Length: 417
Image (cartoon, rainbow, N blue to C red; front, side):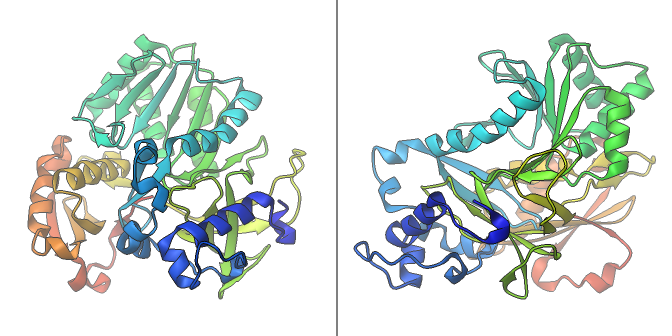
């Protein structure tokens, strides 16, 4: 597929044909039936929003995955997105494996890293299949190849214990958001410690990576750094080359930049993604909430794959505490995920806004079937806060329906991705 020429590969056609043939949501839109051979053009498909998926999720699951044996292959990918709207997206585990191949190939070719190399990863939450595990500060996989840390607690004491465990485990590579990498670097400076010599590659994901942050992390860890752009619902979308350009995994996704309803190249617009791998719940032209530019100029690294330049995404954001500490906003994502699981996944949307070092707004709404649950959500959320300074903050609940951004002008937003 050559994205600049707007050509479509056989794989693109397959996913569109399957959508109108097997997905009730799309079949209804196009008044299609299983025998009809005409496949609409990509431009004829409507733009998807997270709210639409949240509302129509049951009609977007492929019919053959609603019964045995295919239902046994289903995985649920959960995310909150840039605007804090939680989604549960179904994947066939075999499709998920196939979608990860591009990223594993990238890791092997550029950094000689495979699944056999010991890895350290910071996660929003730890899942066993489709069920969230009880909170654990850290966890080593059954095969001993992955050390996982929870981002539900990012206190100084926890970051010090993370460093202790990492040094004892001696991983060869690590995956984490840039803001958490900065917190680890700060802990290393404060304690006058360094990473184990086994570490030889760091993969940054989950937040936009600016040049200053990239430089600080490289200077602190002294290993090759890569930036990977992806989402839970779509998987890996792009990864950086040696020049820092994000090259799209064209076998996984089709990326469009939309301005005034039309796909553009070399112009800034909203980023829409079509998954080419997810056959159980095809997502076509999903609005990511990010903005960027598809560049027509080829990269000097020699790769022929399209380049995506992000201009807006989830920032490398921090909560500021009364002591002057900076805590990665990832802690809010983790707390929200554990909270939503405990309250029957009733959240329709949740956002955070820090007014000052002592006050944080929780702006939220619940799904229609859970009317009146908002205060219970806030109670559970506050109970799960582990950082002592965050517990001392005043967490103010505001219903999303009555929220007026003008009333709290001057604060900083902390959204999700």
